[in-house]
Image 1 (cartoon, rainbow, N blue to C red):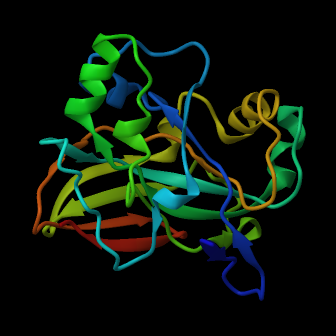
Image 2: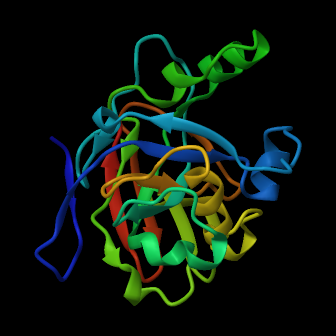
Length: 218
């Protein structure tokens, strides 16, 4: 069972479903040639895709183009179903650092055929995920700097203020579709600057006030 700690407490959460947002930063949508969505675009990763700080992403043999996407992760702390946006932050136990690893070549092939993306997004090791700082430590989740470097070279440098759909609206939207349970995680989208990694690279992801990850690629 994969778990994550709530830093500064004795609480440990078994990771449940991981609900992810695509195209939640306008510049990222633009760099991939996608329209800015009117409503959140959702997909999911299994808990089995999660790895910890220091563990390696393994690029599957069926892909030649694996991309990184640094994301602010939300940890759900209590049962959440049909919640209004003005109450949504009450259900966030903590904030963490996630990397949404994406097999871009596979994703593009599937999209072109109108097929689901799961094998491009949910493969083993596709979700590096940190422990979580308590929600009380982050007064404004829309004032956080997100960075990702590959081999020490900065590739992504953005701010959560650029989210198209904000955290309360994201939780309200998702909870109207899926009941969210303690230990579920939401990945809130990535800023511009995504790109390819190869075996032998090392990624460093950091979100101000939240934490960091160092992830080798094999």
